[in-house]
Image (cartoon, rainbow, N blue to C red; front, side, top):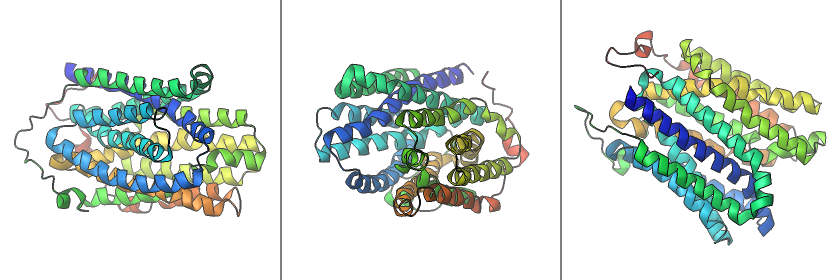
Length: 399
């Protein structure tokens, strides 16, 4: 229990640094591109290609973590983010900007592919609760970074702000590497192969395959509204000022951070039903926000899509993925599901680019419809029985 508590504390502290860095980076990076005169259309196409490369490589990284341990690959994700931030002010030509952004995406995806598995392996009995809390604290820290980024940009400028992002990620590594204790001694577990065929073959268990298909459809839907159109929607349709949009987007991040701190309790009920209901609500709220004619009504409903949607289904989905993953290839199985979902983010912005000239509301309306459709594969999911969720006799709860 002592080791589990220590490991969780280390992950949370590292997540705080990671979230703060990401919040600052994500807000000032678009302004930096604008300052350099970089076209978003060209960058968008390039990032879509980079997303494909990263989705594939994240499967290999997580598969390698099954073989050699997760600690150093988790640290690699944070290290790539530090390199990405540090190189921006120094190497600001278009090719290096593309490399930097690719490293930033790799930082997010590599870490995401391993984060849940790290927690599950030292605290399976309280995974949903601890996973939700760790992500909630990270999102809360990210919101803090976003709210402070404007002031930091005025005080520090672009160069020092990006260096601050790199320093925060370096601090995360400094906390995580010496503090996290990983036990790789798994008796009786066959060492997995790391060949190309084993790593990228679609041999997922049935339940994981259903979650992967659902995740892909969901990501296409969510990324149809969660892209460049998100702030423009409120400005173009309702005439909202930049300040009003900033508040809305800041509340958007808080709306998932705070409920995640308590949403781990959702898995005490039916996993499958909770998963389905939360996703359906998220889809309906996204579509409704595109149909409502008033800024406050639209923004108010839109802000509930994470509050009553993602904050609930995220820990449930993460728990189901870990339950259905095979022990010897846990990292690889989990990352394959995550990677397929990530591929959906390539298509959503393309749909938004086609739909927004027809109607600025259409991307939000389509986003909700596609998100709702993503529950169809989940209807065929076999929910774990009560025995699968009971604490094994030899496990000690993390208090």
